[in-house]
Image (tube, rainbow over all chains, first blue to last red; front, side, top):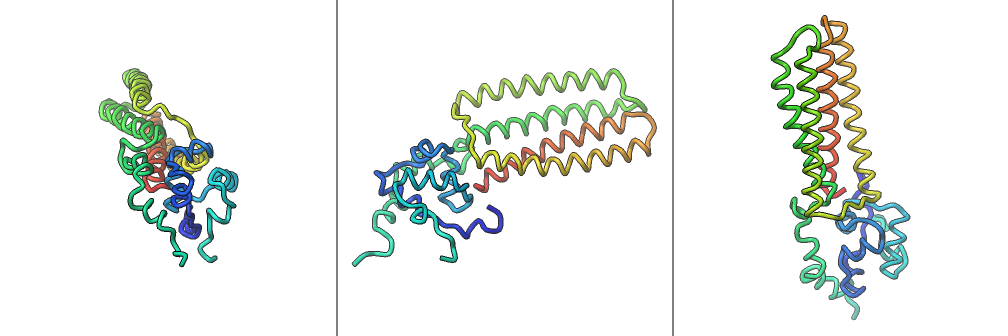
Length: 73
Length: 166
């Protein structure tokens, strides 16, 4: 969010594809957020809380650092 | 040789119909969430109902608030409540998913913050009019206008954040 909104990138779209072409809706359902929030996270427009970030990683079956990456890394 | 980006992800970017079919309306009103539709409903109903109220009430200006103003105000509130209940019933027919999450709560807080600034400014202006004018008509209507404007700014802020995605 805000000034840092583009500093955190993610591979959610790619990882969804590798998890049986999981839709945004399915991922949203399993992580307890709305589809619009998953869409905003994928588009790097919203950085989720640690809680949601960990849940996304768990549902996608990978470590958190495989999903999210800071721009400086 | 391993490619830096898996072919699958490129395919998913271009041809992931399964994902896109749920995302295809994301930028349109049809693809907006229940919260967005609800906010649009509240914004339009507030603008129409209180726009009509001020258009009818201000020409009736007297030093103090008069019974005609009170009647108009009560009518405006009743119409607003009925319009919003009916509107939400219709919205619920098209979108039954009214779940909210942390992003909705953050966006709501940003809306409340901006609305609060407007309301605080309006209260200050109302205090100025209380000192500068005789009777309570102007003060009461500056307060009411401030509240309506604060509500509209709160809603517009939320809609803006929903539209830009954050």
